[in-house]
Length: 232
Image (cartoon, rainbow, N blue to C red; front, top):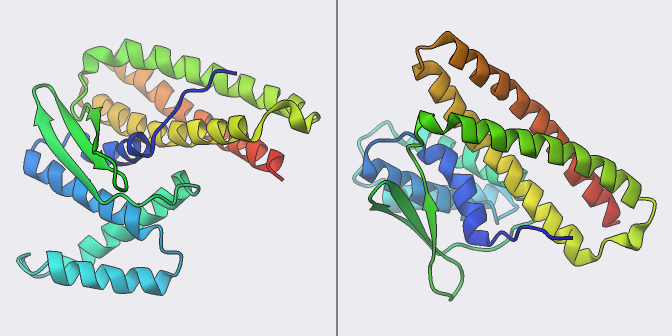
């Protein structure tokens, strides 16, 4: 079974991208990437009180030159991102020492450092062009069909526990966790495009696929639940 491989760096970029989309100011995007990295690392601490203490420490270091009144919003953003990361990638317990965003012509690059290894470069398109709508809808249709088929396949495979190796189960789990994160990005893209496109027929197409994203996410969760049950 051929399964697309996703590194921790690519998982992080998928997690961060929805928050970077359509942010015009480069410095603002850089700060968002940094906050996403902080949240990713905070999520590795299971004790909520410990996370709160760390957040206070981060604010003391990072918020010294910040205008008053922003502390509450900053910490709430971190809490939201921690919750989202743990929902999307609960299996990932890898620390990310740094995630720097740099601009490169028509796209950005996230330079994600994992452990002692060199930084991995991940290209991210933070300003997708609406002309790409046909490509996205075709891709989403493929995902929609594939996910339904995968549910049926795993339901059959569940009757034969050894048909998938532990490695294949883990790789599939990672792939479908990434797919869930991808859907958040697509939701952001399609929502912005629907609001900015003047043609009613285009808006209807986009609205249809925004609805389909909910179905895809639900089916993706079903795939992950089936995979989880096969691990036990």
